[in-house]
Length: 351
Image (cartoon, rainbow, N blue to C red):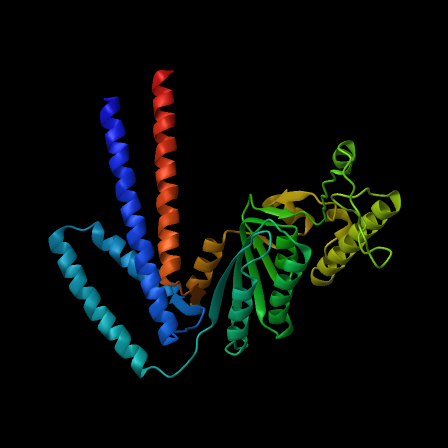
């Protein structure tokens, strides 16, 4: 049995090597052709999905699935007639633009890396928005770098400054920099157990000076400017530098509080700007949010009000090399998951 497993593993390794080699060869050929022809394209592709229409089609599919075959055929025939009449009615109707809800998604990481896409989406919308339109941002972020989230929040401020009605929906988390973005909304909605708040600033600087000194290693830190470097990783930190660093943190916290207070004037900022987090219902009581609801529930309610809900995304155009890389990464991840599942299952069986 062990010999068979070893032979199979060797065969699998050879096959994987061959596949990888062929993949690399294909990528190189395509890359050379693209460079030779000078192929260039937009980094992102705009995609707009009418959620009302998608929901209607899926509901019809769900209803048809529960019918007998004969009844399903009759229902499909009736639906085709209804669709034809509906399209004809649209063609005959006057050109009236219904209230529109533009839906954007922002899933934030430490560096708020999706800010460029958000900025481009907002730039496009600002040229299209009408007075009765609404922009809904489905936001998920635990925060990150101050300057990164400051820029992301400034993008949402562009909508406010243009007079657009902005709604932010938080289903999971909007903390620290995420809440800095969320508070830009005219209406802030969160799920019952969404994590809200964390209005604070944190910094962490490791220092290995004593370890280096123990091994007779000197570090020279040369600066021009008294506070060019207050705390360091390698050098010896001073009380003066530490005090200046804490002053900078406090100043950043004050700016954060002022930013929140200007956008939510009814909020007692000093009461909630302790760095703590609250769940949705607690956040509602303290005035951090305006309503308890999920983004799905809110958009469904807007659909019932006959608003046209449009989901706007910018999808990156991946090169062949990127697609192969993503596919390989996903394959390796799935293989790792299966191995872990097998190990856990075998471990459970032995207990």
